[in-house]
Length: 398
Image: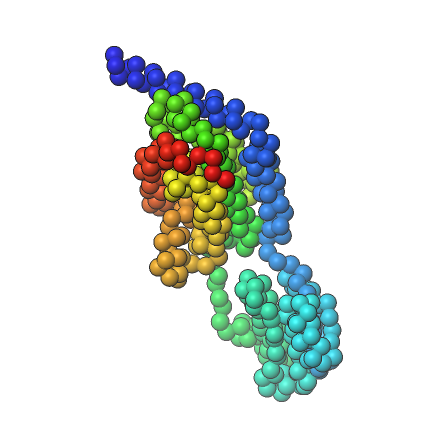
């Protein structure tokens, strides 16, 4: 009987905390914008940024010192590349260096004098390419595409030379192309950065917004000196108080994710080849874990501004350390530890595994376990949060 009454009281207390929290944020337009409007708007902007899939029409310059039939053919072949656009045809190398310095071009191709004659005399002309590798992605794409164009052109010339000696054209092409590379692209077979980077950007944006809202939700109690009222509405239970506080935000952000993923996978027709239930479960766990981090950070010392600064620092660099722009295994130990502490790291792995790699669910169990460990750590700090909530010296701090 006492157990039933206790459960009944906890249920009533939980509802009271949820109702109190809804009344608290419903009159805060900024928080509503952060929860409802901003996530969808930012994700739409992100999708539009990556809509081309990969960089296109990057400006480059050509210095044609030969001006022969073959050199002009090479120019035309380069112009057909979707990644490059010849915006400058220059007459000397200094012009090219100046264009690089002013950030006008991403690459410069120098076709040397006697380019055509050296090819026909079976010499090896030195084609010089300069490219900006500050942006490794862009530098890699330009270098690969330009190299492919040159190699393809050289194979064609070699095949024509062999054909002139009496070989059938098909045999001549096979002889000229001695090595055949059979590419099998894994993980991103669409060669489209929209499908890859958009998901990561979504997760990073939402992690920051969810954590900032959670920090406001917990911090406002300390700032206004209402922590005892908050605990009293939960009948003194810090667990019930915490669960009741984060529930409204959990529901709102879950709806955000549902809308975003509906637009992304259905309206924008992005690929999805994995387990739908795993993505749903991991998304809900991710939201709940990040919201719980608000309790962890507020348990540091109860100072809203100080704890908010720590939370912002913690989440801001998540994109760089999540293992998608630079491999975690190549990072130093402190960076690996920081990466492992981020819910984003494990959530992104699950998303990519289920949307693009089509891996069995069992491969993501370790990532689910990691999220649960972070969640467990948050709840271990609740006793300290309760102690701070009852300490009047932590109230009314700016």
